[in-house]
Length: 327
Ligand code: AVI
Image 1 (spheres, rainbow, N blue to C red):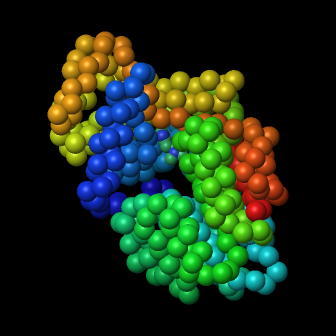
Image 2: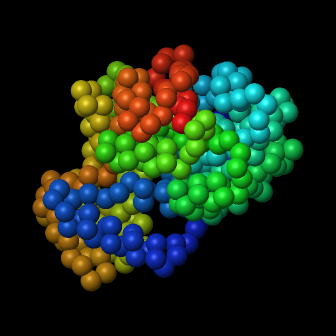
């Protein structure tokens, strides 16, 4: 069913608005033009992403949900190490729907752990710290609102216990290969020997299945992409006409790269604050990559970053992988 959670509007601090402005201008001044999909997630973007996760064609959420609901015990056993207490950290926790299965199971087993969700959205953290202890009585939870690695440092300063870090949903696929490698290296540097990572990867599969997930028939993904232009209009005083852009998605089965673009339907000029950006007809903005992986590639990513890939959990179709890595 559809998660009933709607996150309230959140307000960017001044310095964050500056970064947003700089990133947007430099991206649109580049050739080819690009925008960073990390900016998709304002309050409205969060809601549209919820719609995507519930739509027919978007399979990754359902696949990973199946892993967490059907293989809860196996997952839990893989991350529990003889009797020691640990910190279960989740990067980009969102509404934690998948993790709930694991948290509930760990509580039932009387496992000694603290759940530390990390999210850039204060509303997400408030929601989780208000509601999870009600849903799961006895849960020890410490929410951390901020950037992933800054908050990881804070978590490490708070306790010396073993750490298990979850990064689900194939969020790593929204980074370029280089950024993903660097991200995993930095993650490894923030962990100690014996710590673990539980990482979600969307796997290569029939190209039509992948493409359909990013080109849904209801046009939800199109709205998701156009919402970033709307956000730029609102927050950076721009005048994008959304009807003058169309959404285009591609999937290359060789590289596993699924990419989203917005295509200008006419010659036009857009004003953003004091800047003027020209678009030629058919010129595109590269919006997002959603990389698909082979199991071997995920093992190579682990290896390069200094992790040992120790366990694989698949859904019944083998469309999605939750991998367990040991630092
Ligand atoms: C959050 N991320 C893993 C999603 C994905 O599948 O790349 C974002 C998304 N973009 C379009 N649809 C969903």
